[in-house]
Image 1 (cartoon, helix red, strand yellow):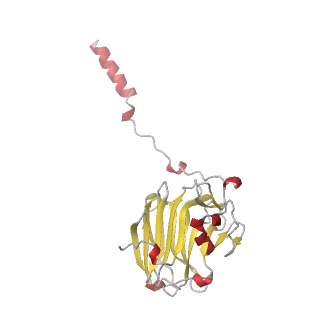
Image 2 (cartoon, rainbow, N blue to C red; image 1 turned 45 degrees about the vertical axis):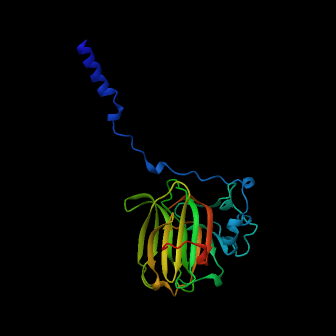
Image 3 (cartoon, helix red, strand yellow; image 1 turned 30 degrees about the vertical axis):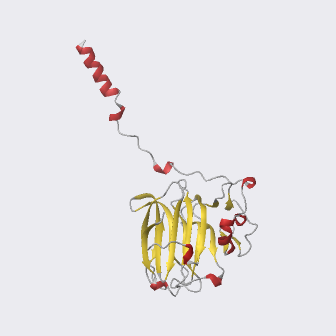
Length: 274
């Protein structure tokens, strides 16, 4: 009997103790977010929603798949599979890119020219949103969801881009900022800032620029502050949406906004330094 018990214990130990087996490795690239299907009958024109009407009224929409631009003042009756509001009043930006093709975008571009501004402006300029960045399927390794861009006439580069990246510096599925930290009209020097793991749900993101100070906040936490004195001669504008700029990327991406504002009034925001 003693031998029988001992044998059963041995069999259980070698064959039945699954907790002694190494955990099965999961390929994280196989885990991604399904992009909601566009439904003409269950979607609405973004401008018809009061919480988006102000930002749309002062923007044009750039859809660089077929060269479409919906100009300032022309978005009142516009929606498309790349730009629409769902039944929960969330604003969807969606874009698809073929592998080894040029950049594509679905972005609101602040304007027109009279609204272009300097980082030195004392009243300030504030990009404020609540959004969700969907993780794309294999094929797309990075996409941008926010920019502060210089004009063609002053310096046609973004001083700041906020973006998602599949893997960078040993960090997987994080949000990042890339900032030009050199003077315009020189060889651009870039600095990358880790904004943390991509939230699975909606999160708040803010960029405040006032008196040449730029603050980047995620969920009201101040992540990084820059002094942009070197950039003050550049005229800028905000962008929001989705943008794929890597030639070798191919696939579909989406960012979904619960709210989005471009403010020029500091009384409408909570300073990062209070």
